[in-house]
Length: 206
Image (cartoon, rainbow, N blue to C red; front, side):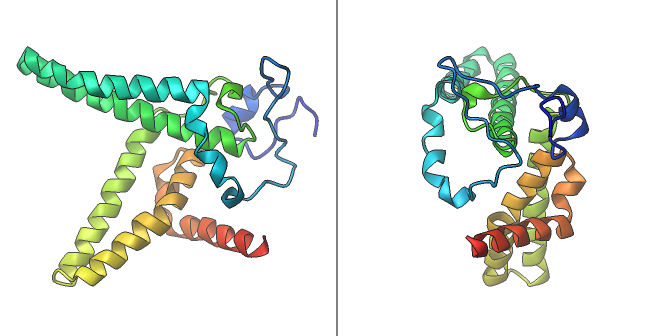
């Protein structure tokens, strides 16, 4: 595979705009890893996940969003207009924070392990994904409530449904949403089961 032909694992839009060669940091190093290389299992990278907030680009985003969250309630002093401003800013903070999280997942899957190495956002990285993620949460919560109604308030069924949907299915649904940008793909039970099966099989081989 040549540098001019981005890996086929990228979306069509990403292949068009993918960088011709891996980015490098200021000291000439690069965290980029070829998609052809055998990926390191994510459970072996867990310790590195906790260090990501310490990287400068991520730290700036986190501190900025945290500061905005603390300052937003001051808008209540502006009366009704302040209430509208508060609602708008709350949605904006949630969208920006969630989108950055999706960007981390997307870029990591493409082999970029340092936030400073991330290429510009490519066409097709939908800003609608945070809203679709919110929809997934609402639908899963609705299924939990429906299970409680059908079983006349069974706490055991509610707990099992919550665990199955939010602890087991949600990570796979998020992966599907990030990689496809499709709400339907994120909610497809067969696709979710395929992702979970892949994880289990990969874990058993390690």
